[in-house]
Each structure stands twice: as structure tokens, then as C-alpha cells.
Amino acid sequence: MRIFDQNYDFESDQLVGGEAEYQGDPNLEELYYYSKYIIIQGRMEKEIPILCLVYIERFLTKTGLLMNFSNWKRLTLISLILASKIWDDDSLENVHFPQVLKEISLKEITALEKVFLQLIDFDLVIKGSEYAKYYFILKTLAGNFNSSLPMGPLDVGQMSHLQKNTEKAEGELKEKYRLKMKGQRLGQSVKF
Image (tube, rainbow, N blue to C red; front, side, top):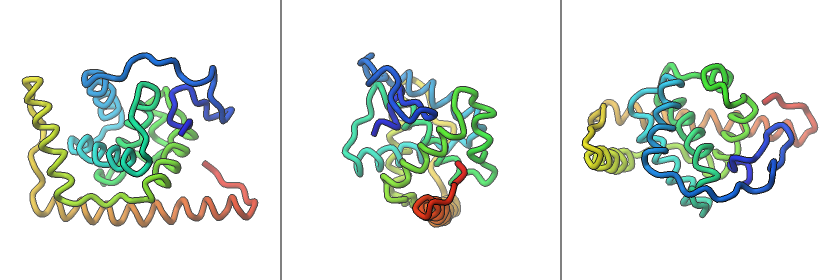
């Protein structure tokens, strides 16, 4: 999964400088501030971290990979972006993220999204029980830091909206990437 490694260069399609030297795993504070930065710059809704956690766990479970010092930023970034696209009716599109997050490119976002989705088998549907599980995990963590969450649990209407959005996004993204992969197999150029 070198594409998620912090030293992977999307232009040259290789690890630059080899595998990243171990720098210690991220702590909760690093994860918090990086996620907060992405959420603010990407103008994301307050529920996005919960969806992000669902997708990260799904990715780690399906791939058997561990989140570590060299991959946590890219895994967090693409999980937040996918969560935003699914939850926010007015989410930024891939082309807009590099405009607000100068350190990433469109090629990077598109490649991360494609690989991430393939590795989770485009499994984007979130059930109410999954959302509730991560809501209470985050609520507990916030309490440990003498803080609170800016949102409450979802009501029935919001949960119905989330499930419809995740089902719709799952279908649309499957179709989008199937067409791109089919075009690549036929030798056609595909824009990323």
C-alpha cells in the first residue's frame, strides 16, 4: 500500500527516499489537529469525523493494514474527503480540494480515492448502529479532554438521509471508477 506512504510521489509513481523512517505513531493530539485543519479548510460539516472513523475502520479491517506514522495522514485525508462528499450536499469536488489544501494535488486525491474505494470494495453504506458507535467513541474521547462534541446523535430523518446518501454515493463512485478502469483496459486515455 505504498500509495498511502507519506514518501510516495504521485508524479514519479514511486517512493522517494525509500520507505519512511519511523518517527513514532501519531498521538490523539496530532490526529485531532490534522483532522481539524482538513475539516476547516475543506468547509466540512461537523458530522464528518464520525463518518471518517467508520471508513478508516472499514479500510483497516478489509486490508489488514495498520494505521501508522507513514500512512495516517493520507488515510485520514481521503477518509475525510469521502465522508464529506457523502454527507455534505454542497461538498467540494476533487478538483476544488487542491485550491483550499495547497499541499495536495488533484492527482493525489483522485489516486487515493480510487485505491481506497477499491480496497473497501466501494462499501460506503453506513448503518445507524455504526454511526452511533463512533459518535459515542468520539463523545468519550472528547470528555477525556474536557471537551464536548459540536453535534448530537442523529435523529431518524438525519439517519435516513445518511443511509440514502451513502447508497447513492456508493453507486455513483462504482460507476465512475468502473468507467475509468474500463477505459484504461481499452487503451483509452483517462483523465484524473
